[in-house]
Amino acid sequence: MDAFYASVEQRDDPQLCGKPVVVAWKGNRSVVCAASYEARKFGVRSAMPAVRAERLCPEAIFVAPNFTRYRAVSKSVREIFTRHTDLIEPLSLDEAYLDVTENKTGLPTATLVARTIREQIRQELNLTASAGVAPNKFLAKLASDWRKPDGLFVIQPDEIEAFLLPLPVGRLPGVGKVTGEKLAKFGIQTVADLRKIDLSVLEHEFGRYGVRLHELARGIDDTEVVPDRPTQSISAEDTFEFDVPLAETDPMIRRLAEKVWSASRKESRIARTVVLKLKTSEFKLLTRSHTPGSPPSSCEELTDIALSLRERVKLSPQKRYRLVGVGLSNFQAREDDAAQADLFSDPSLKT
Image 1 (cartoon, rainbow, N blue to C red):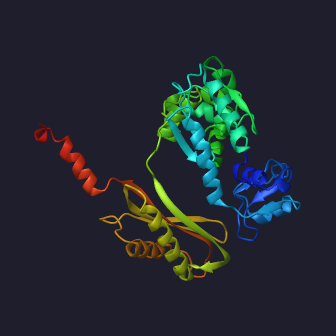
Image 2 (image 1 turned 90 degrees about the vertical axis):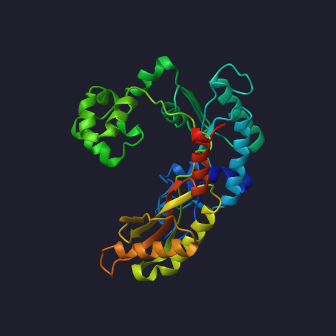
Image 3 (image 1 turned 90 degrees about the horizontal axis):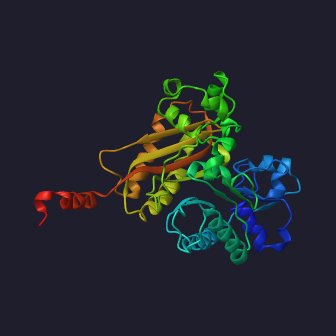
């Protein structure tokens, strides 16, 4: 979806159409959730501090996020997807992979499926979406960003090399600032440069990710579209109005733990690891985690573990923090489910 949250706001309030819209709570501690394309022309981007967005675009109209509404629209988009395939892997409220190798409508090509889905979104929801069509997930993701907004880009199998080779290596998934700098030391700026490096060298320098780099440089990605992928983690965080010392984060941690515990009750699996996230006033990110002998069995237990994780932060007591987060991860099947699975997998018990 194109500038999803901002586009929904512009659709629902015609006075916002054509204007620079920033979805964020206005204030010193807020960050941008989304920016319309009119705002992006000024350099406003998601995850940017709201105060910086305001400096870059003084004419911006700030709109408080309404995630209940965004989730409802996302559900409507998903319903359109399901007319064409059940192989849908959501990445977020506004993005998903679809495997249309076999599609429900009998359309002869993936390009026609993408074109039809985009038109249905436009006609029924009055929103625009961009689509990438390619032989695998990695290439489809790249293609989906190629002609935004309201675009469709197709990479045919015989076009992969011509498309990939000129790209900066920073366009490859997993190549951030640190990896990019390390690759640059080897004189690697483009995918074409990366192709020239032996697999053994990449493995030596980057471990298992070196193999992934070797494959991506050749357009290889065998990962499947996985519908209803199990939850990997649940978290909640809060950015404070004013920076606070660690000792004063107690009420925030308790509130976030309650929120996370409530969300975890909707999962069929159970989490084993508790995570505490902190961000200092200098924007340094810290995480501490603990996996107890048995999973947290109550909100109180989760809260106690999260609070105790603060003791593993060895910074000065005078250090101040701008953000705290609590999370659950390492989800596994509940013991009774696992026991039942073992029961039915035991050949001696089969009749």
